[in-house]
Image (cartoon, rainbow, N blue to C red):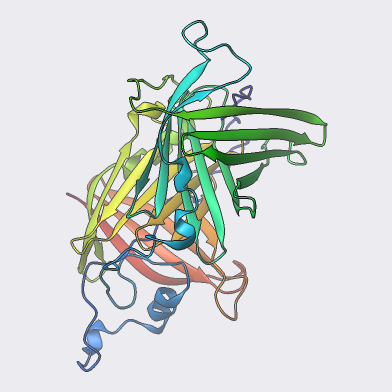
Length: 382
């Protein structure tokens, strides 16, 4: 990733205090009722719950009928495997610098691993950052969420896919809060030269303005990755560039997740990643039936917004955005459904007490003009 010059953190008057943030989805832990067995009236999902459960790409803890995780991962083959050439331990070399040890920037360790039964690819970048990569079968696009830990760099969200020539190409557009008419355009490509070499090239443009930057890193596979510690700093602490991150700390902890009726669904562990100076809140959701999910929550000081990227072992993903606020916080995402291309979901997190959170899910079919509550989930500190 490319270091960029830090910008001033927005003032209190520039940061809105609307409801915002957090996450959402995960699947339940029970078996579906046999087709021939009657469903008790009290257990029947409402029409709204059934609609949300059937919404493509939206799997929400225990909404609708409960189901176990897919016995054989849907991510074991096909397009989910297109980025596997990047998986492994690497030394990334900038061709514009001499090799180490004469120059500390000559080579950077990078570890790329799979997670969630192959539904996610995780990057741990020795230069100070992590990325979460996944394929969305509904859109046919690959997505990357990049969260840095050091000063001078900002989170990044990109989408794209594998081109016909075998090159993975992703692109993202960011809109800085201090210049609403400007666009920061990031474009990255990954080219597998052979089994042991990958070229990562990038361009960065600011429009309007004509600023352009480009470069590449040559990834060389290594059998022995050196021990490395990511650089740290205070950027996500109160009063610093991304201090708004700390408004999300009320979600941290180990939680038992249940439906409003008391039905136990799974366990959520939400922790700060110490390798990124506390700039990333990472959730790991699991059920007894084998379902897993990863949720990344973070503050983007460039756009002055909260984001959450969520990927699960069923091959589903959802990315939400919200305005900056303390509890309650709300995130929204577009989620088109048949007959309602402007549909979306909204998730609101409320801190009820030190040991209890509530997560309210709402559905809109008219582009956010009206919202209907679908389900409230309860997080109890475990």
